[in-house]
Amino acid sequence: MRIGIGYDVHRLRRGGPLLLGGVAIDSEWALEGHSDADVLLHAIADALLGALALGDLGQYFPDTDPQYRGISSAKLLQTVVDMMHTHGYRLNNLDAVIMAQRPRLAAALPAIRRHVAELLHADLGAISVKAKTAEQLGALGRGEGIAVHAVCTLVPRES
Image (cartoon, rainbow, N blue to C red; front, side):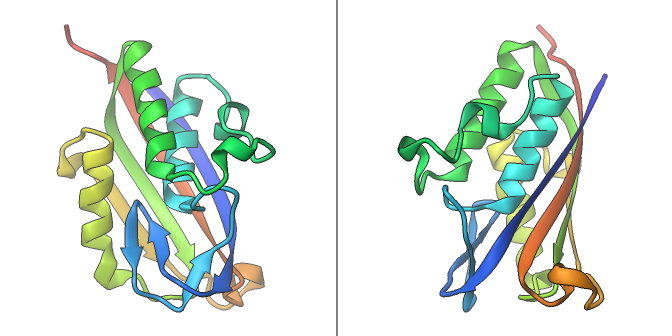
């Protein structure tokens, strides 16, 4: 079994929609970034890459490369999932925590969880996505951005 940890953070700006886990959330807030800024998918991709000991997302898709401007984070994650399969592994489970003071995410979590499971070719029971506030502490608590921590376990693929 291999274990990976991923983290990402992006600044919020006015002007939605907000993308989390590939799901568009009706919000007056959106995330800033070189790609579509889906902070959840970025953290998940980094967790997978970490479990594979292959570095981080920025090594493969640098924010200095114009070809990745506005790219779908789901496409980036698909490349990482393909790398996982090429290296002989499959996802065993994923646990992610979205830290956001705003917007409120509870109603969107079931759709996000289902879509993440689809993107990872995983059973829904292997995917956990939670949302927490920062209790109004620091930049996240002031609603300046959203951060995600993700942890995954990988196991060898069966033949």
